[in-house]
Amino acid sequence: MTDNHIPLVDLKAAYRRHQAAIDAAMRDVIENTRFIQGREVVEHEEAFASFTGTRHCLGTGSGTASIHLILAALGIGPGDEVAVPAHTFIATAEPVSWRGARPRFIEVDPETNCMDPDALKAGIDGVRAVIAVHLYGRPFEMERIGAVTASAGVPLIEDAAQAHGAEYIREDGSTVRIGTFGVAAAFSYYPGKNLGAFGDAGSITTDSTELYEKMRMLRDHGSVKKYDHRVVGFADRLDTLQAAVLNAKLPSLAEGNERRRALAAGFNEKLAGVGDLVLPPETPNRRSVFHLYVVRTQHRDALLAHLNERGIGAGIHYPVALHLQPAYAHLGHRRGEFPQAEAWADECLSLPIYPELTEEQQDRIVAEVKAFFAQRGAQ
Image (cartoon, rainbow, N blue to C red; front, side, top):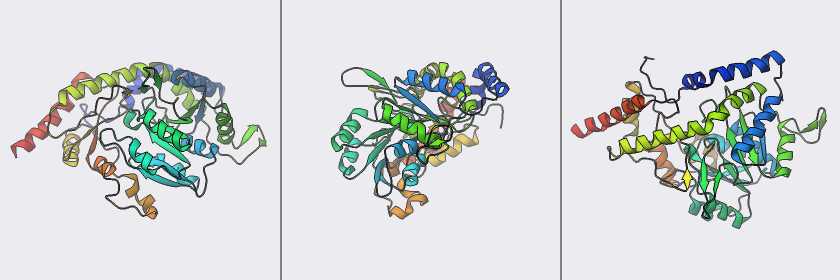
C-alpha cells in the first residue's frame, strides 16, 4: 500500500483515536484476568441500553449470534418460516436456517434497499417472525413495517448490525433510536462497524424482561447459575476484552456518527449529477448513521476497478442477492424473482466513509469518480 492509499475502512486511524483509553482498559482486564463475564461486560450492557433507550442489553459473541438467540428465545424452529430481505448480508438469514426454519425472502425498496413494506404485506401470511434490516445504517420504514407485523400478529426483529445510533422520527414527531422498535434488536460489533470491537462481538437490546431472561440463559449454556442448566443453550457470551474496547469507544459514537452524516452530505453535494450515479436518498424521518455510503451505477465494476487501481478502497455490499446465493439454491429461486434486490446487487458500490476520513481524502475520491465518468463520456 502507498502512503496515499485510502482504505474502505481505516481501522488503524480508529484505533489511534481511542488508543490511550483502549490500551488502559485492556491492560486492566489482562492484569486482573477478568476474561469471562467480567464487570466490563455488565458495564457495556448498561451503557448501551442507556444509549439506545432500551430497558435491557445483552452482550453476545457476534451480531449473528444475537439474531440466533432472539429466534431461539421466540421458539422459532423446524417447519417455521421467517421473512428476511432478499438483499442483505447472509448473516441475517443464516440463524433462521440454524433453527431448522426456512427464510422467506422479501423484495427490497428500490430507493433505500431496505425491506419493502408492500412486499412484506403481500408475503407475510404464514411466517412466524420478520427480520427487517437497517441496511447501510439507514432505518427501514419502521412504522409501516411495524403495522404489517402487528396486523399479522408476528414479532418484528430489528437487524441493527449496521445502525448503532441511527434514529427514526415517528409520525407524532417523537424520535427513537434504533433498537427500541421491534421485540428485540441485534447489533454487531464487528471491527469495521460504527461501534466496533477488536474481533467478533455483538449485543441484543429489548424492552421485554421475559425475552431478556430467556436469552441471557440461552447465551450461557442454558444456565441460571453455575452448573444449573435449565435448557440446552449455547456459548454466545461477549468476551470481557471486547467489552473493554467497546466501553472505551462508546462515548465518542454519537460524535463519530455526526461526522459520517457530514461526510455523506458532502458526497451528495459534490457527486450530484455525476454520470449515472444514484446517490443515497434523503429520508428526513430516518436519520442514517452511514455505516456505508452506497451509490449505484450501471458501470459499477469498471468504476470499482478504476478507484482500486488509484489507491481508493471502494467495495461492494453485497454483490449477490440472498435468493441467488449457492447456500440457498435448495429453495429453488431463480434470477428475476426479486428484480429490485438483483439490481442493487448488480449496481451498488460503497465509497470510503469513516469519522477519520479527511476533507482532502474525500475530495480525492470525488475527483477520481468524476474523472472516471469524464473518460467514459469522451470515449
